[in-house]
Length: 388
Image (tube, rainbow, N blue to C red; front, side, top):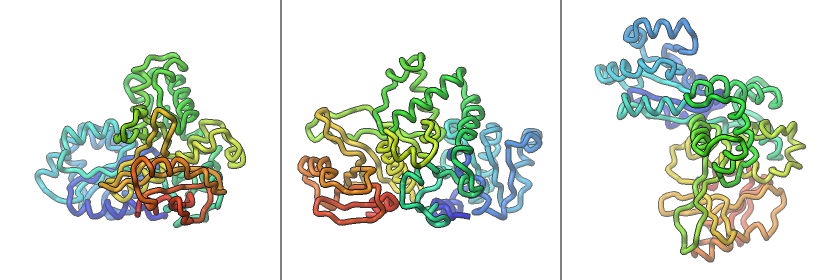
């Protein structure tokens, strides 16, 4: 099993907090991680009807028969359990008593805020990072191979073809997660919305334009984008808040946590097709920024990610804010570095008077380089930017 980076921060918390909650998208490896870290615990999956029946019949007995602790999968299926868990942990005070997993963060967050505040530590398990995959599998030098394959564990564990697995995943996600959400009545339009989001990866999110294209209202699109965020399909990158006396873009950009999913939604059938696709640069950008997101989540870093764009067209793809330290990152999919790639960074340097060490370029090659204009990182080495 590939060792998940987040394990290093989960285990210490289990020695302090009575409840550990691991949430994330379906098929990201939550159950595998929970069973590996807490192998001596009893295990219950509430997806199974007989297990749900036992839990509903006598919740207190269900939660107290274990000897060392309990891992409960898909805990959101029985919301009533949270009140019982609260009572039990208040009575015993035992750290690491319950390990809960869930694929519907929008439901879980509400339950935690209502019943488990101060009693639970929440972790998000995202699909594999480049670092995690490289620890167990050979990586191609081509980011197109990596981006097309995607980062979901089952693809690597079962040696599955992305063209076979992703259509099933998309269908399963819509049928299982989206169908359970109140207000999503037209699943066909929601699937169209999902494809439109893939086609606008790396671009500004414009709810009104998407609403007009699909034929729904603005509020519906805002609701649907919240669903995609809460189920860890996409994330919105917000604009940087410091304006430096400039008029700035206020709309966020849309990115996906997994590039294999983007490729499937766009109908890209191979890494070679991706290499010549008109959205190749945006998909590479999504890969790089999602790797930053995964590193921040996996290490419990407090760094913030943003982008910067003014009304005259100057733009920085990613701004990393860590305390008082700010790093500007330009992202280019080309495997050959061109001096023009540093133009945006040079403008930023003049605007902010930052040092060259605060300028970084990520490109489609694999070697790190040091240029007088800034630091250069290969696409496999993105975490090194956040590590300083």
